[in-house]
Length: 197
Image (cartoon, rainbow, N blue to C red; front, top):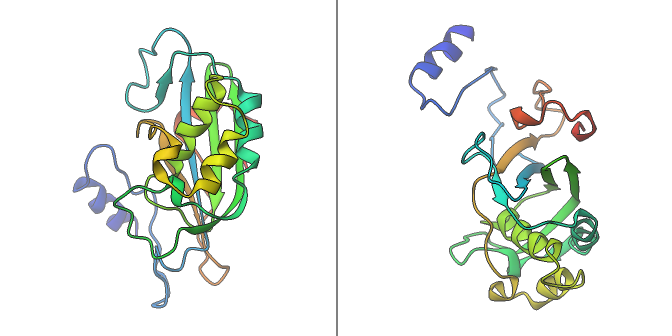
């Protein structure tokens, strides 16, 4: 399999790498056999835009109150109709998803939104991030997250956050499909031990 990994990487774009490969049962499907997915959305929160990590994180120059964002996030945890957080072109059959956790933490100038669910709608994480940042600036009250959710109307949720800073960091499968454990990432967050798990 090592030769396959090396050969695959030669033909991939420079921002994509295969780190391992394994023969899986014929019943395995990377998308349809997944039981949970996990994303992280990373915000650089400072008055001065970062010179490094350009287009790898979202920059927000306005002070963000992480406590407000975390309190608002609690309204979204659980099984809900997330129609207000889906893109117009979303093709998912059902807008009902189960959010297992939605955490907002600050690490110096970095803010990490960590979300795990059984599945996600198109632009759902970016729309959640947009709502939480709006609440974090104080433009909207904490309860606005609940109001947006209950409205089931996309336009009530405001602006979709930038794609920069959005990372798929984990996909989970049942034990019948053994996959190696890996660092959750993204790579520039390796120094934040409290983010592990």
